[in-house]
Image (cartoon, rainbow, N blue to C red; front, side, top):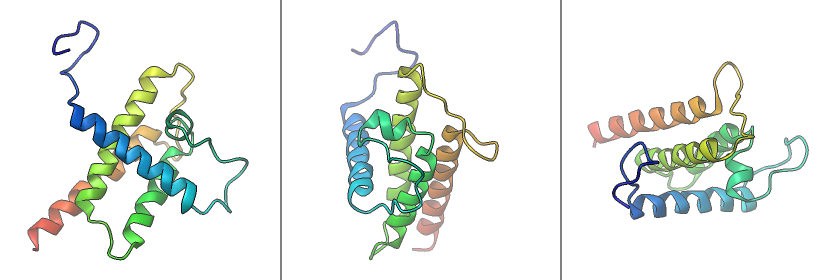
Length: 134
């Protein structure tokens, strides 16, 4: 609905939702088929949005995913990485607001949310720099 008394901002467009879901499916596919689990402590999270995005290691997963995207041949452009990171911030925001048990405590004094936002910001900056030198 365009107007909703329970929503602070404007309505999310369907294309944004589809993009966020597509990014989530890419990350889950990477976790299932490509992510190196040898250094993990304990069991990996179930391959669901709540388990992965709500994981205390989510920022680490995102950083590893971005490294994997950059290592591909050809490497994924920073503009695409920035878009993926933006979708992951949106998904994290959803989990934070819908799960009362979510604990977003990160490491080194940065929350998980701050860490993902830092990666997004850096990808946006790198994408802008790429456009300058075309």
